Image 1 (spheres, rainbow, N blue to C red):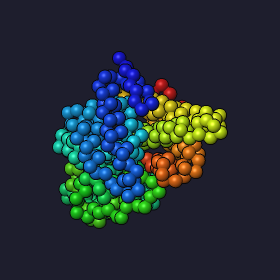
Image 2 (tube, rainbow, N blue to C red; image 1 turned 45 degrees about the vertical axis):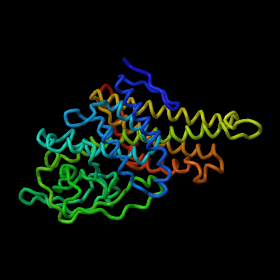
Image 3 (cartoon, rainbow, N blue to C red; image 1 turned 60 degrees about the vertical axis):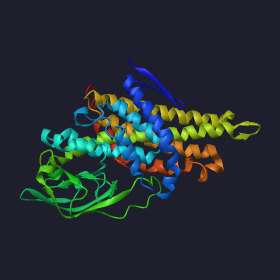
Image 4 (tube, rainbow, N blue to C red; image 1 turned 120 degrees about the horizontal axis):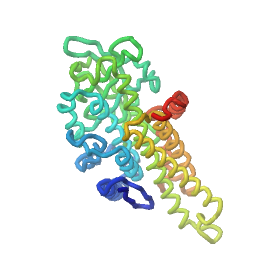
Length: 391
């Protein structure tokens, strides 16, 4: 029987009492541990590894995976709402959790029984942090054009190339690496699970970004890096299928993060507009501001409903490619609009770093780009129109 959960002005409908308790824990951690540290850490560009360690010890880094391997055995409907609550407090941490989920996805869904038993408990146990390496300097959303090469040499692959825009680049403990093992187009791509300490693997200087500065992004360079063939996930040439499936799931993670960020901006705007007085009354009683807040709240609610519908389809084993793209598109475009309007509600104060809304605005922009730009999401949606009816 579904249960109503309420905290911080947000009402949710969750499937079990266990899920409600999980959200209680998440809200407490987000409120007491994440939110108080976010502003200072983001300003300093500080990577909060200790926060991920804490979340891992609490089991929040592995919620959608099987309990037998150390996961939380939670539905995506639940785990994504946990991600949203984390993002509401500190987007960089939530995106980091989402990326870790993405990095675990290939092994959890395409690994052999032997591989899963050998490596998955460590990946899900909370002490390790993962990264997902698909994009390259000349191939971002065009994943089929990747050129990082893995050449067979006995029981190993020798890997050379550069991966770009890698979240957790240089701080991750393991990388899921998409490489080219033949020149047969998308059939020539394979997936390797690579330890960060592999000789020949190194990270470049982190990118200087406009937002999300507590989440390091860097190129990963591979020079004659030797990776055992036993660390290939799925058959040789099966990496493109792995990559697309992982991206569908990853897009829902980014959608949830976007909703959490937008909710934080809405929360701030509602609070400020209740204490800022102009023309003798709080500004949220003025129609121009009230209408803006109403539109912001509607966008947040609609985005949340769409990503949850996509999550339910995923949990049910139905095709969710299009609706995942729709959720990512709507949620991240809405986050950009909501954070922009939050600054407008604050007026000149919102343009200063005295209030968090300018940071929310800077952070929202990247969500329209990662896990496939929103232009690519429109391509995915358009290509699949009519194909998924009844699936």
